[in-house]
Every structure is written in C-alpha cells, then in structure tokens.
Length: 136
Image (cartoon, rainbow, N blue to C red; front, side):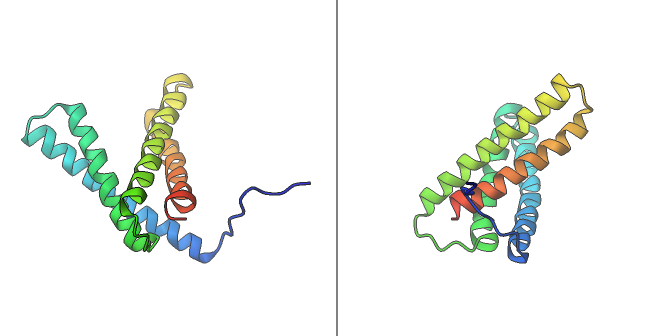
C-alpha cells in the first residue's frame, strides 16, 4: 500500500507562485549585496558581519514580499510566520553551503557550476518549505 504523505498538485497556480518566488529571490540578491557592500565598504565593518547582515536584510525583505505578493498571507501571527520563514532560509543557506562544499570541495567541480546546483537546491527547499510550512 503506497499512501503519499503529501500530495502537491503541479498546477498553473503553483508555477505562478514559484515564478513570483523567483522574482522575489532575485530582488533579495540586490538587497543582500547592497547591505553587505554598505556595511563592508562604507562603514568598514568586518566582512563576515557585513555578509551576515546582508543575508538577514535580504531574508527579511523577501519575507515581506513573499507574504504580500507570492503567498498572499493574511495570517495575523506575523512574528511566528517570520520566524518560520527565517528558519527555512537558514536551512536553505546550509543546503547551499553544503552543496558547494560537496561538489566543489570534495568532487572538485568548478566552483560556479557547483554554485548553480547549490542555488537550485536551496531555491527548491526554500519554496516548498515556505509553501508547506510557513504559509500553509
């Protein structure tokens, strides 16, 4: 007896949400780099602290945009929802880092080819994690 734990219908609506999620994620790249650049180059803060702040700001703006536009959440528990979103993002960061480490560090693939796979893996994790957990 094969009973799926979770059934996701791959519909046009799901594809549209995924595309919106991608647009929001792409905007987050600019927020991440912008905040990191300002902190590191203008404020002369430590590069690792600057990088962390870039990630936090990007995850936060992505949460707001995904809440409003992608998933159209009306959940009044915004704090709880944000924490869920941030946890998914942190796991996604771990997946991204682990993928680069495995493909580039262990298998000796080209770094940027490894990064493409890492971004793909973490994007899928982030989208489905948020679809099924944060904004369910």
